[in-house]
Image: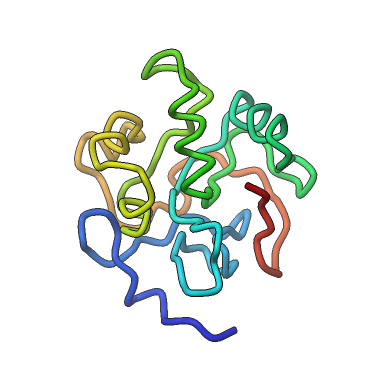
Length: 155
């Protein structure tokens, strides 16, 4: 698969993109990073923690992430448009339909696709809001999913 190395992708702070999850193996390139390259038409840039409400919301829009083994609590690289759609549908900043975001693992390209830094910070995961960062692997419970292949998400 032709793409630029993950160490060249930057997060929303313009720092090297942090590893997000290897169990389940996430990312459009299934390498654990929410990096975006030319092949990723869905812009899987948002590093989010899945909730039951988001999984229900995504399934209602034609993308049943449970069908590939994902469950609430999984870390997953989300399509920017789907995350924004959930944010726009939220009734409040605490609405669980919007997955919490790990900013250090969110590719900066999310900011070019209708999401602002202010939006991301509103829904930042607690350690991120407190200024955490670095590698996020292992910081939250993970439910095993599938490995290998290219992410397929409908819009």
